[in-house]
Image 1: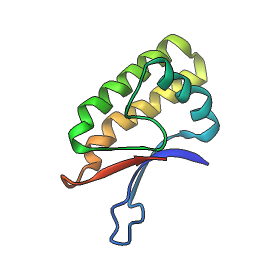
Image 2: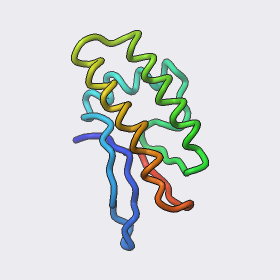
Image 3: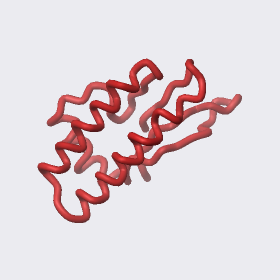
Length: 105
């Protein structure tokens, strides 16, 4: 299983876009610790955010990235940095409409 940012954009409410964050084990081990240590409020599991919150979400991802640089090494750091970079690039593009909502699960 994995955790991702999801857009439920199909007419039947199913996911039409998923941006991977991490495998569940990696998320639980590293992302959860980073989220707690950096006091992230929006970008966490079982939350959602709107277009108006992009700037705050990107700031939170930068905080998580800085946490990773200070606390991870080698493969874990490379993996997390790669995922954060992809999220920072992909999230703004996911808002194809003003009323789009992205969900993290």
